Image (tube, rainbow, N blue to C red; front, side, top):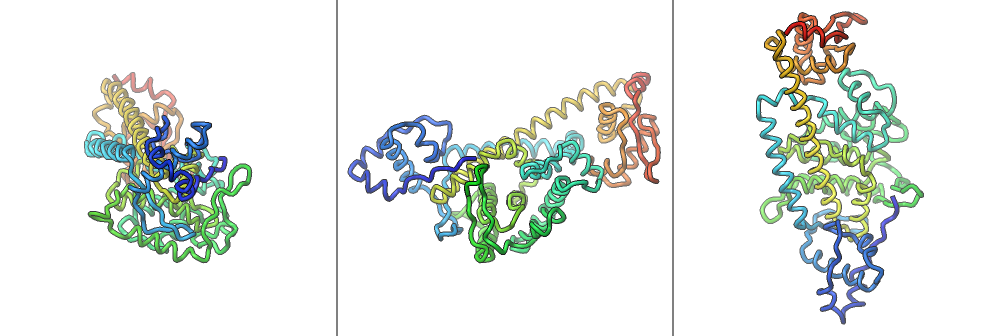
Length: 440
């Protein structure tokens, strides 16, 4: 991630082009694939320096006229602000449409238990950790969480911590935000990894923390540790304040601002990103966006981490204009919901195909939808070992119910029951397809 060139000062540009003001306001804007373009990219669209500066001055004057300040300041005492350009209105509308479709899907009882597997709830925990450098694969991480296996490395510990953090976010969604809750989020996210270096649940007490790039160039120097308590209290006040009527801020926009600000404050030695994203989830679910439990923004962020970092830098270098970060996150949320629908459509197709085949067998009418999910796993993974603990977590049921499902499949000879360390295990038969074909 290279450094971003800070835009020209608007006051200096006004003095330079005051005599050409009419020309500035009538200058033609260039074609760009970015609706809310930053100076760092605008300056590359033409070799004419004066033209670039006039275009930038025009953009800044238009944006300043419609921008809205928030009660949060940078370390120099300047307010953060944002615009909601047309493309952001469009993204919010598309997100709301997708959300409505998602809610309809969830309320359909025929789909509810068959596709909303607990593995979806693990996605953000896994992806957020991978974004921060965890090298554990998704398959291994998912197996660890479902089997409740103890983590065997710091990477696995980070993933388990993030899973516990997301559970805490849901549990605390009805609480007001205070510094203790932020510290608690951080504690859960980081404890047991490198406690002496990270200091889980404690604000940093030094100013030797900064964000740098590959060339060790400093990209972000956060506020002094001496100001953190006061600054975080203001962030809590912003989160708890009810922005209604003329002061209304869309809950998703406000959640994105909270996400940005915790990253800006960088109050911890490590784990700032995980805590910031947890704060985002906490606020959207606090505002009844409960389906976000199944939506992973980190899955897409880790695919393009440079764009994520650049959205931060664009805001910080352009007079604290949060619009860059808001636009980036809205696009990410929209894409995340679309990815979820692709997953659900794929699972629906797989499930329908399985039902069509099973309907020709004698066991079909004797299995419920969740037992069919287990059967499908067994067919795809001959020799797989199932435990009640794993099934409880993957299907989101109680221990007794999980054991009941496994016993039922064992009664049908689909799974072979055995014991290991005094624990009942259920093994998927190698000849399971032939067995079911014989029962047609």
